[in-house]
Length: 135
Length: 167
Image (cartoon, rainbow over all chains, first blue to last red; front, side, top):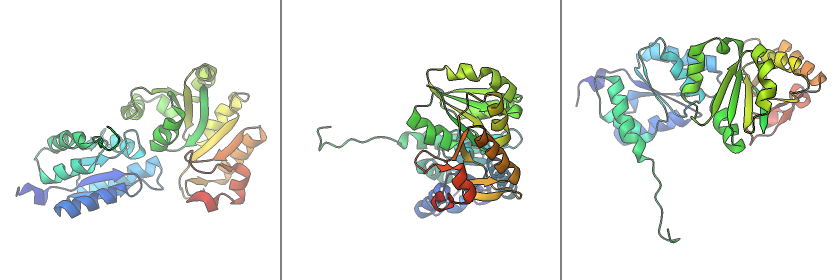
C-alpha cells in the first residue's frame, strides 16, 4: 500500500441532509477506508454558516479535496467560495463509485486523484432496461 | 410566464431553488437581487458556476431591479426572483408596489438575535415588523421552503401555528 495514504489529510464530503454520512459509511463498509473522508451536512445552516464551518474543517483537517453533491446547491457554492483563497479542489455531483476510486487510488496530486476518480465514477451512472415489458 | 415566485432565502441560489422549485415549474431564468453581488464579478461567477447552462441568471441591485422588473415580467419563461434578506425584498416591493403581490419566505437561518418561527425560518423583531408592513401593503407573505410543503401564512407564522408542520 502507498505510504502516502496513511499520512494524507482526509478529504471532505459535503452534502445535503445525511447523504455525506451515508456515503462515508458506505465507503467504510466496502473498503474499510472511511477514515480517509470526513462527512459534513448543510442541514439547518445558512450559506454563510456553512462556508464558515467548511473553512474551519479545511483548517482542522488540512483537506485538499472537497466532494459536494448537487451542482449549484448550497454545499457546492460554499465549497466554490474556498477556491478563491484556499488550495483545494472541488468535485461536484459526487457518487459512491467516485469516492471508492478516490480512496483506493491515492495520488500525490489531489487534483489528479479527484479527476481520475470522477473519470471512473461518472460513467457508472446508467440505465438498464429489463426485457419483461418488451424493452 | 414572467416571475412566478418572489423568494427571500439567505442561501440565494441553491438546491431547493434550482431543483425543488425550478424543476416542477420548468424554470427558465433566475433574477438575483443583491446590491453586493451586483457589484462583484467573483460572486456572480460563483453563482453561475453550478447552474444548468439552459438557465439564465440575471444579477441586479435593487435600483437596477426596479427598472428591469417589468421587462423580466414580460419574459415568456417562468422565473424566480431571489433576495437574501427581507429588507432587500421590502425595498423592491416598495418601489414596485403594484407588481409584487406575493412573497415567499424560503429560508432565513439562525442568528443570535433571531427567534425560531419554523425550522428554516428565524426572524428578528425588526424583520417581523418589515413583513407586517409588506402585509399591510397588500403583499401576501407565506413561508414555504419547497413546493411539497404546506404554505404557512404570515398570521399563522407569527402566532406560532406553523411550527407543527415544520419538520
